Image (cartoon, rainbow, N blue to C red; front, side, top):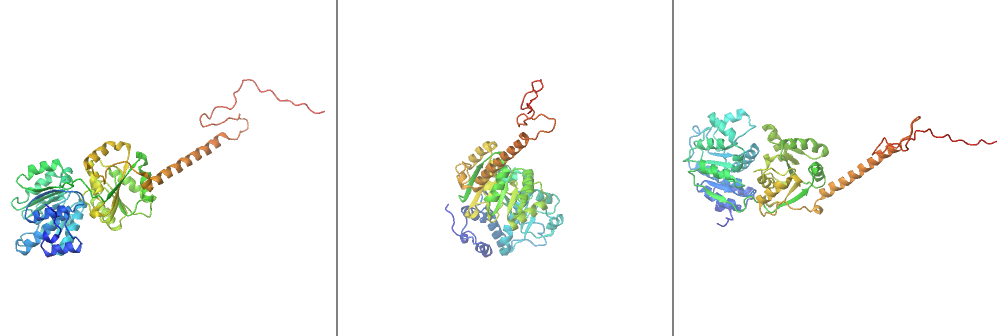
Length: 462
């Protein structure tokens, strides 16, 4: 099927089209042109498409259109009877992604006039409890929080028409399987339409669909471009020793970094370490830290500040998937990820909507195994392949090497100064003069013979 060239051909509600016009969305992406028509027809969909292809609007636009149309057609129950009963539920693996989805839906609902609520970690317990008293059109939630709310009977999904699992493969990877089962079983399976959206194929997701959604006939879209990024991402691979990473990062920030960027690491300890050192080195730059061990409020504050102020975000893979950050120019893989798929997701934060983006990889000898797996995962995708690095095109490399030479010369000069101090020491009264060399400071210049030295006599003048 050839892609549709206009949103007017796949969407009809004027308020939804007003959103596309205001945001200068002239034509749908290929995946949007394929998925939205089937979703509008009432089909459940299973979508695997590349990062940055516009998957979020694949479900956000048709859901808003369908909910608004049903409301105008009088298909919505009495408001007094539908409190705490969301009409659509969107599940996200992390609070940060849930916040981003909320932003998208609120932007659309500004035109469509739908009630969007969020249920995730970090929200005040009182606010979560009040959801049971609200009429909710669209609920965006993390699985754990929603599952708990259902157990406490604070929410009811029997009126839910649409259940979306965004980053579905990650939801399973993060251990939410039981919560996802409970949430789906809380819906009326004769009423609910399911949407699964992922950037990568997952055998665990296939098994989950066969087991839990065995009665659903999905319209599946397994894009040929899955696991791929746009060609607007330029990659630079920097080969170095592990103990050179910090110096290289400092040189990069000083000489090369421009615009908003993310430094990705594997462990929260590394986030804390870099966050404690880099701001001191670069007091004029704004730095933000984000990892899963932080409290929800602290994570929200850091993420909001990064969106508002820009600068550099030091983060674990908590921001690697699904996050669409405006004006993000570069990402640095301070650590290559443990899993090859996360390399794709990290690099996919840049180069979105055909904007030019840059990915910088710090590669050490111990990364050879993961490099093989990464290159296998991305196949022949030259945009982000880990290949030989051209030093001439990267000023930070020249800077770090120049610094290394300077440091080496300084070290030699200090060694010479120390050597001079030790060799040319003054003889103290009553001591034999020794040469204190670096190799053996206790070796005397002259060997003692055991006989006293003969006195030198001079003939007196007469």
